[in-house]
Length: 167
Image (cartoon, rainbow, N blue to C red; front, top):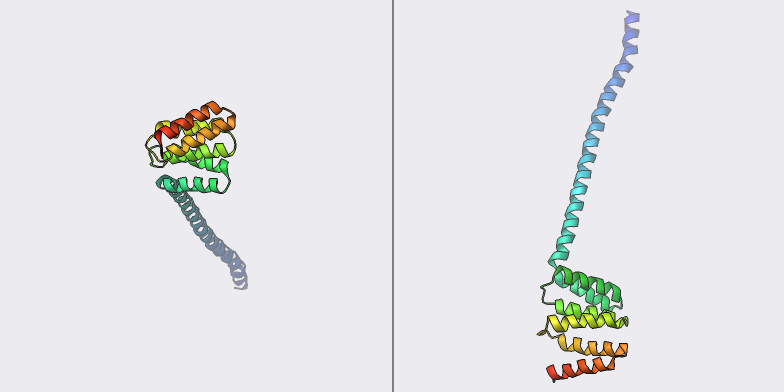
């Protein structure tokens, strides 16, 4: 009987260890499932955030325009030009496109890149003749010609400005 008791007592720790092993295996499987769900939810949330940011930029052309204008007023002409160009590309039919071209021209003018400024102001003058920025664009275009030393063209543009907009 003592041998049987000793055998049972020797077997009991092995049984306890196998029960613990089974319990740990179940817990590990449950944890792996939870981690997988968390990773999936994280990826889904990241996709939603990315999509929301894309929609935000698509839905708010006024915000994009305003950011460009604020960058210009803050002295960051290169960033302003990038934002305003992006605005023009994404929203070519928006009512502020003429203004955006004007401010792009202003960024070039501020950096004394007069030839590019002239071209941007010309886009306002030719493509948006009824917009309020046309007189300002003509005036700045004349100043850009003067900056290049082309006084003849500057006078011509100023003459046209006075002719079209006498006030």
